[in-house]
Length: 327
Image (cartoon, rainbow, N blue to C red; front, side):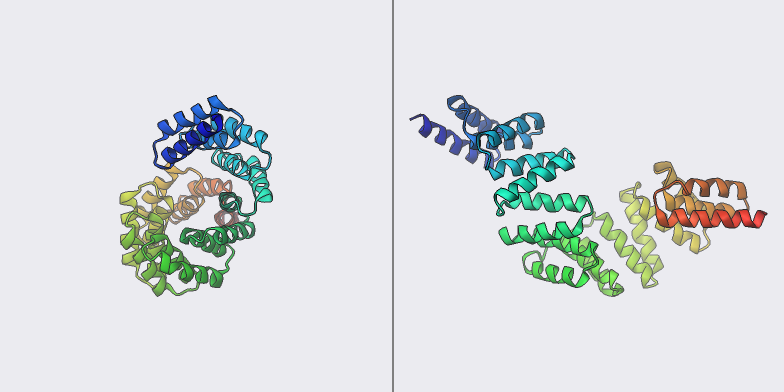
């Protein structure tokens, strides 16, 4: 009779859990544990609920108890791995998720989480494998979009386009689909098609700052500077802290001869990000144009302390040029 009661409470808890009634679901799980605290499934389900409510330490305790009770319980390993991923405990997450798929290679969430972890670590080939494995288990369009993103990072543009075309019938109204298509066409120098794709993204999600910035850059590539400036200014109205958009707007203004406006924008960027390499380099250029060599040298020296290889090198080269001229 006790096992019947436990199964009933577990079933009720799961139904309430999926319905979003977490307090009542937690009450059912706790009652089930009062009857028998040896149920790995109840510990796992309770752990998942606690994780959803941000009670990470309690959740981890229940996941570990589930693993002790059932050492081959792949879902508990997967869930604890996801918790570690949320807590940015990368090594623990990878170990647990790898254990989950070693027990059960059909553990969807473990493959999905490993794919995300590999993306965060820049291990795109491994990420590609786990996204493909995830899709075989659960063929959802969002997985294809993530797979395409990983392929783009590897410059596998043809393969990425193939995956996006496969996703298209299932994700016709997904703005991310068109944003990724735009990135591919931009990389292929097909800027006209890229513009159409980014416009489609913004038609579905007008607040997408990244897509709007990409649209502005595509406009620049086709010589439509006024349109690019308009899009960049719109980004900054919505998000004044978007440094890349501000820097690119400043570069356009500098190219058009509006040195003071460009300098103002670079100064705003540097107030927000004091070691922004691009802003430091161009501010150094402007200081040099204005004849303020000492200020230019100071700004460029700061640029050499940044972790942006391209602009650090440009800052160093310009600083050496200044020094050579002065000698």
